[in-house]
Image (tube, rainbow, N blue to C red; front, side, top):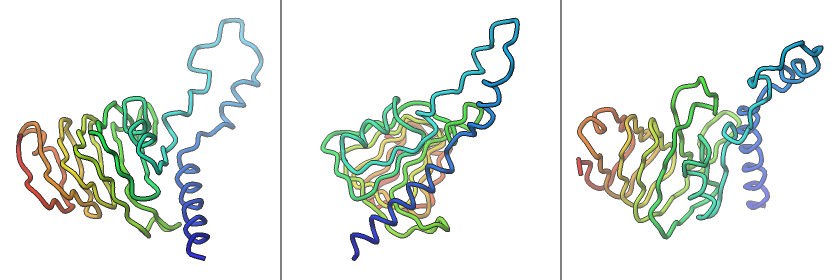
Length: 191
């Protein structure tokens, strides 16, 4: 019974996350059914690839490592505890909800939530070292077990998240730009 409930919860959360990130295809269809113009259409009339706007929902190490890479997604959610046996690098510039005109933003969701966005389960990401190179990267819910090295401005450790290890910043400016509301079990310092 618990497996069925968990499966239904994961499916519901996945649908909620993905439906909020979808594009409005009605506007694109209207643009493509309009009468042909006498000039060539602008390159912007083609719908953009939706690869960046969707969340990357993962439950194993290789998929997680790919999702946080520069070729990954703006939001990464794990569905269970994940252990990565190598150093993890969070890289690339991403925008809120994948919108090119959105704020620079990236998020790691280490939790499941209900329809009211309340955290219902928290997960642990275990890695020897997590290096953050993406600007405005937010860790929410759950725990990163391992040391975190911040090399980009705007790092946020949400009040629902924990770093079970040390939190190092490459410079004082990066530390000053960070929002640290969550728990760090080790040192928080410049390194």
